[in-house]
Image (tube, rainbow, N blue to C red; front, side, top):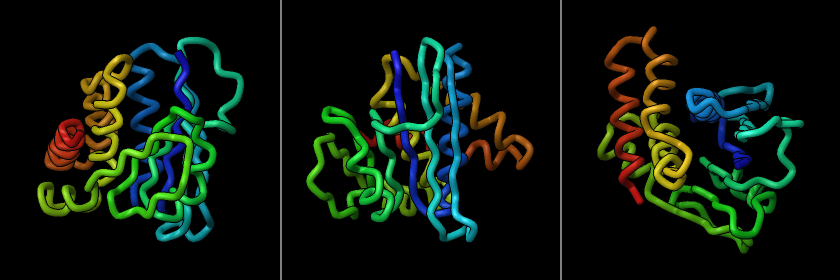
Length: 176
């Protein structure tokens, strides 16, 4: 088993946090993981992306040239990385993204709308999308591992922040 994921969007959307959470969840599964973040000098509002490689065997490079999954949190992220997703791969994007012709399956859902209207906090958009990613990968990714990773990452910010992120994860999991 090997899963290569690119997560991309603007700085401030939680792109790097989403990648870190996915990597930590895979570590809970006892899998091999690499996490390779990249962001522009401007941080908030600038381009950000990360590569997460998850496997049941040794990983030789953290850099992804052909991805299995792209999580695109912005139009620019979709346009920049969609061509790197293999045929038969998956692209998760908001329904507002203008889809270009790609070989991968595009799963466009109302992530932003659900996050704003149902959760009430746009800062957990990344967690909603991670929930949907987990639902698509039930075969190897257990939602409980993401809950553990969320709790570990956010407990220092208080139980309310942990609970908000768990709510967002749960909603994303049921969004399909």
